[in-house]
Amino acid sequence: MLKKMLVLLLALAMVFSLIGCGPTDEPASDNDQGEAKNDEPAGPEFKIGIMTGTVSQGEEEFRKAQDMKSLLGDMIVTATYPDRFMQEQETTITNMMAMASDPLVKAIVMVQAVPGAAAAIDKVREVRPDMMFILGAPAEDPDMLASKADIIFETNNLGRGYQIVEHAQAMGAEVLVHYSFPRHMSIEFLAQRRDLMKKRAAEIGLKFVEIDSPDPTGDAGVPGTQQFIMEDIPRAIEEFGVNTAFFGTNCAMMEPMIKQAIEYGGIFPVQCCPSPYHALPGALGIEIPEDKKGDLDFILTAIKDEVAERGATGRVATWPVPVNMMYIEAGVLYAKAYLEGETEGRVDRDKLVSILEKIAGGKVDLTNYADHENFFMYMSDHIIF
Image (cartoon, rainbow, N blue to C red; front, side, top):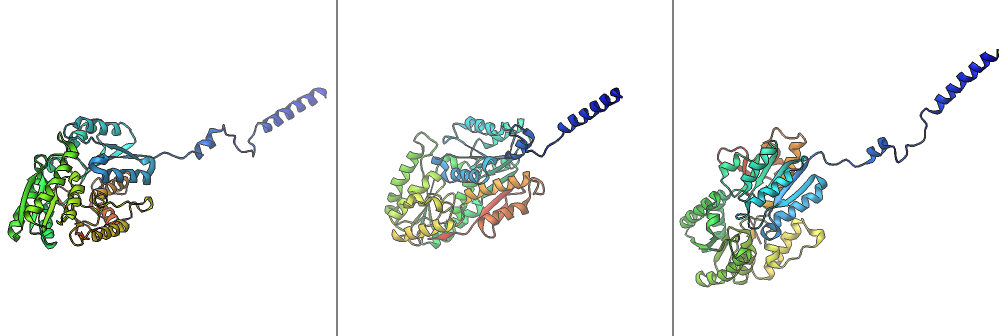
């Protein structure tokens, strides 16, 4: 009997010990990694790289890249190419390779796509063949780039050849001065546009004058180019009169060109890269408050008021949409849509148009270059202040 009682007590003890080891209703401790992991914010599934110029060569694009990083956070990584990109193409390649070394970077948007972009793409594709490349404002052979990049945005410079000339005459110009330098005139689109401008000017009776300026990537740098423009515009107005319009092919020319055209009574029809933000605020001394950055209505009103204050109403114009900033935003949003499986393949024109129209706030004029379905050219009407 005693033996049976001992066996029963032992069995009961084992049952209670098993119950004691079972789950409880107490919350998991901080050391319970199963729960802690669920509370940790997940990182991005992919990243998108943005490569732009520096503030001195392309402030507009640089700022937009930072804006996209603020909007999308860790999904965005940024890099710049050097100011002297012609002489330092290896640096451009190195900087792009550094972005591509992160396996989470699945797409790279480059605006402006300066010389060196094609070589950088080739190097990246050697190790990352599936990388998506979206380029804006390309400066190398367009047919060659179309074979390397997935999507290319370009301002319709061929269409602008006629547009700029006719627009300048409509603003009262009798003479149109075109500033450039040999490096830019070796770029096919820019050379063809110059030729079309010259042709159309002759057809409508507008005097067309070509003037060579220093290249901002040369020995004198950006300061040398800007000093030349500051000195030459007063001279040109003295020679040709106040109904002289000025156009230049380089971003660094724009601020001194606007300043001097207004100061000496000339006409400024549009920038090389049309945008209300491009050089106009700096040339007019407009400070943009922190809470108004990116507010297009604010900047358009501020420019209009400042132009009127300086007695230049009707003599200054631009496009209402900042094109290079638009190329960056559209490029990033399109890459994001592609990586999230929201496009029909790598080139989805309908999706691209819908993104551009949302950014532009209306219909966009988008055409293909030659027979390249991935090379898109954009053009807008002007706004005259």
